Length: 103
Figure 1: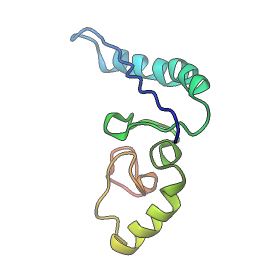
Figure 2 (figure 1 turned 30 degrees about the horizontal axis):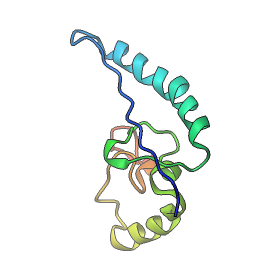
Figure 3 (figure 1 turned 45 degrees about the vertical axis):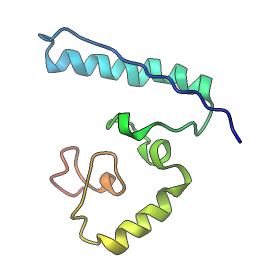
């Protein structure tokens, strides 16, 4: 049995904010605020994927942990053409940021 704690962190911006301003807020959270939470939680704390950041740089570990390799094998077996893709999902690192072109 392990202890668990859930924390929901949110930020907001004016409805007139530009995409550039919104991305600045997102970048600040991802590079500064999230690092503090990760220090507090320790390694491999994970994330609740229904409220996941699709820009999470290490989504494989954060969202899927030690299961990612097996999930990749399963996806290759049942979806060998990568017909089903989703941002920050299994195999999405093989696609561009829009999910339109293989990289």
